[in-house]
Figure (spheres, one colour):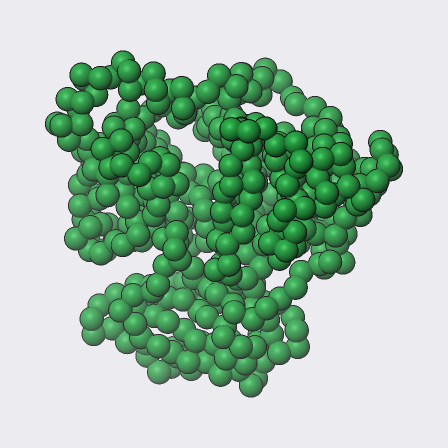
Length: 453
C-alpha cells in the first residue's frame, strides 16, 4: 500500500528531484507520445489510412495473415471484413506465426494477459503501440475529463507492477511521489484497511480517484455503512472490470462525484472512454471496434453483440478482428459499420451463463437479483455445469443469514432462465477469492461457450 509520501521520500525528491524528474519524464512522457498527443488535439486522424497501413504490414510481414489478406486495396479490405474472429485460443496456437518478421531490436517486448480463463496469452507489443496508448489516454483525459495526468490522483489498484513497472519499493515510492500518485492496494481490503484508506484520501485530497469498479464500490459502501465521509474528488475513474449500474450509484453517492468508465485491455490498450454525455466514445484512431451478432454480422445502433477489436497501432503482432471476450451495446456507427460509440460494455462472454436449451443468459441477470440486498457484503454466482450453480456469499454481519423465503425466491428465478432442473447451492464463505490481478468477479461461468466463427 502506497500511503502519503513519507518524509524520507520527500527528502529524496528534494535532494535528487531534478535528476529523478528528468528520468521519470523521459520514461513516462517520451517525445513521440507527446507529439502524438498534440496531433490528436489538433484534429481528426485518418483512420482509414491507419487500417490500410496495418493490413499492408500484416500481409507483408506476418505469416499468419499473409495468405488471409491476399490482394490489395478494396480486395484486401474485403478480405479483412470477412476474417473470422481471432480468438485467444488461436493466438496461443499460432503465437509465432502472428509475430512480425520485421521486429526492431530493443523496440518490442512481450506482454501477458490472463483473462478469466486462467490460461495467459503472450502478446508482442512495440514502442509505437506504447506511445499511442499513452497519447490516447492523455487525449481522453484532456478532451473528455478536462484534466491532465500530472494532477494529484489516488489509485485503488491490485497490482503495483501494472502501475509502475518497478521491482524496487523505493523506486516505486519515488515515482509515486513525483507523479503525485497515491497508491492504495486493493488486493486485500478489510475493515481496518478501508478505514485507513478513507483517512488517507482525506489527507491527500486527490483531484480524481481511479480504481477497479469492484474496489471503488466496496470502499464507498464501507464508508457509508461506517458513517465515514469520503474525500470528494472532481470525478472517479472506473476501469478494468464491468461497472454495474447499482455499483455506479453507490460509488457516486459515496464519493459525491460522477463516475466515468474506461474500457481497455492489456492486449490492445485503450478502447473507449465515457464522456460527459454518458456514451462510451471509441478511440477509433487507436483501435477499430466491430460489434457482431452470433452469425458474425455487424449490428447497428441499439444492437448488442460480441466485440471484435483491430489494433491499428501494434505492428509487432497485429491483432485483427480480435475476439476480446466482451459484449457491448452499440450507440452510433460509421458508414463502414465500425462502432463510434457504445452505450455500454455489458460484460465478458465468460460472464454469460449457458442455459439448458443452449441460450446465453447475461451475468447481470443474476447480479440484479441481489440489488438492494442488506444481508450480503459480497457474493459470487458460479456456474459449474449447465445444471449446477453455486452462490458464494459473505454476510455483512457475523450473524447474517439468507432468509428461507429469499433463498427460495432466488432458486426460482435462477431456474426460470437456466432450466427447471438446475441445482442451486448456497455456500457461506469468509471471503470471495479475487483473480490474480485483484479483481472481484460477481459472476463466473465455467461452462465453455464458443462465440461467432
